[in-house]
Figure 1: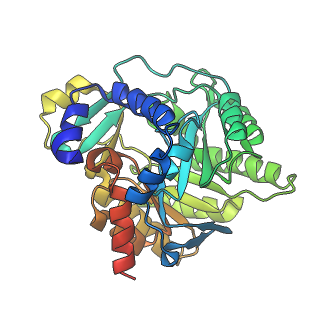
Figure 2: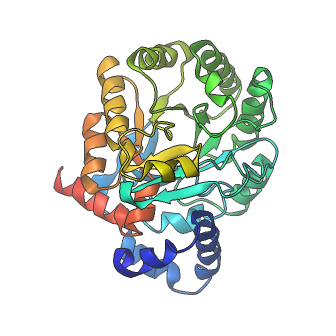
Figure 3: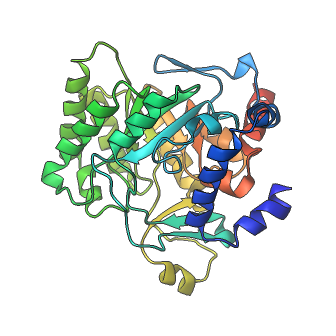
Length: 344
C-alpha cells in the first residue's frame, strides 16, 4: 500500500514539505487514543533474540533511525513505535540556525537516492535538551553534534564541547559529526590532527563525568584506504568507543539520473542506493583492519533487507536507516528484523 499509493502521493510534494508534514502528523496523531498501540502492533517486532549488546547498552533490536530526520528531538518517542530500537537526534549545534537556502533536498527516484544540502538546520541544542527533558525516552537516544556554520574551524572545538556538555545528561551516546559535506569547510576537520584534537578534548571532558557515555565518530564514505587507516589509528589514540560508517557522499559516480538533472540540483550529500556498496566496503575494511576490535554502526544505502544483512555481516553491530525508510515505508524496520531472525 505504501509503495503503490502513499509514496507516489508524498513524492508529489517537496521532500522538506513531506518532512514537516510527517513531523506534524506524528505529533498530532499519537495524541489520539489507541494510535500508539496500533502502530506498535503493526510495525514493531518484539523478540528477545533481537536484543543486541553494544558499548554497554542493550538494544531491543539492531535497527535504528539515523540522524537527520528528528533534528530537534521532537518525535523520537513516536518513531520508537515503528520498531526502531534507537533514534539519533540532530545534528544539533550550539545556536539555532536556518541552514542553507531552499530548496535543499532533492529526490532522485531512478537511483533510489536523495541529495540534500540542509546545512545543519536546527533549533539549537538548548531546544533539543528541553524536548528530551520534557519527554522521557523509551528507546536509546544518540546525540549527533556539530558546529554552527558561522563558527570558524579554529573555533570549532568550542562548539563541539558546548553541545557535548549541554546534551550529556539527556542522551545515551554521542556521534561526533565532522564529515557532513553540507557545512562549509567542515571536511577540513576530518584531517587526522584536527579529528584527534577534538576527540581528545571530548574524551577528557567525559572523564569528569560520573556517568560514562559512549562517543562515536561519523565518517565520510569518500575516504580512501589511507584515510581509513587514519580512522583506525584515531580510534586507538583517542579512546573513543566506535565508528558510524557512513555519512552522505559528494560523489556522483554511476548515477542513472540524467546528468543535466544532477547538475541542476547542484551540491549536496548523496544518500540511498548509490552508497550501498561503498558504505558496506568501508565497514568491512575497518572491521578487518582492526581485527573486529572497533564497534561499528553501519549506515548508508540500506534500501533492502539484504543490504541490512550485508552490513551486519561486514562487521557492523548495529545499523541505521533513513533514505531506505522513506522509499520503503514504515514496514521496513520490521522486514529487516524478521530477516535478522531468519538468519540467526
